Image 1 (cartoon, rainbow, N blue to C red):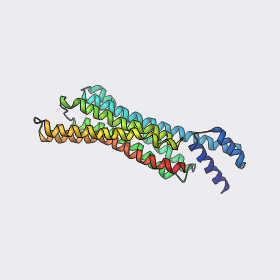
Image 2 (cartoon, helix red, strand yellow; image 1 turned 30 degrees about the vertical axis):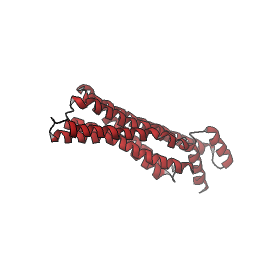
Image 3 (cartoon, helix red, strand yellow; image 1 turned 90 degrees about the horizontal axis):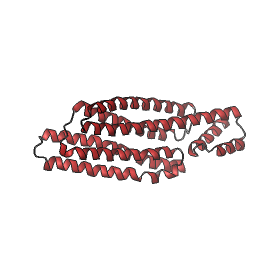
Image 4 (cartoon, rainbow, N blue to C red; image 1 turned 180 degrees about the horizontal axis):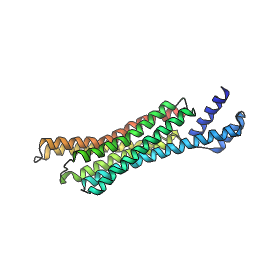
Length: 254
């Protein structure tokens, strides 16, 4: 029981203080109950966990960037580049899933942050949703081949860029959550700003579709409205993650 208590205490210090080695060493001497071999193992486990979480976040971030580039490729008629993005995002999503399973295993096998494990799992799930929705949406373009009129191409590109900016703004806060949770909330303002801007651009596209573009059939308008919503979901997922991060960071700092 004593061993488990001290182990959890050190894991907490390690994760929330971003490997402040001085603090860890002070904890070891203060506790004076664990052997150097055990402490070396604990430090190694936590270090590996942080490395894997960083790699997971990096992979999701790359997936969002590939989604943005892929949509722009599609709109500009760059078919070979678009096909490359489909292959790339497939690989990134598979890598993210593999990393998430590994992180889940590390949390439970080594009893790291047991009191916060479910919260962190939820955060990682929401991060995974970002790359999942990016991949699914890019495949929608490949499957359904939407026709985007030249009058709307620049607006669809702008919608994609701003929606992904919302997601890109949430990744620094996700990394900070494990190191400086008190700074997380102040890092989320850009997520909400870009999410609102995405909504404005999407509304403008839909108004143009149904109010101004008389030459398009209703079925074409509905199809493009559908793809507007697809692109919007990236910023919606980012906003949902930002809401969760704000709550979890507060809990971790108490």
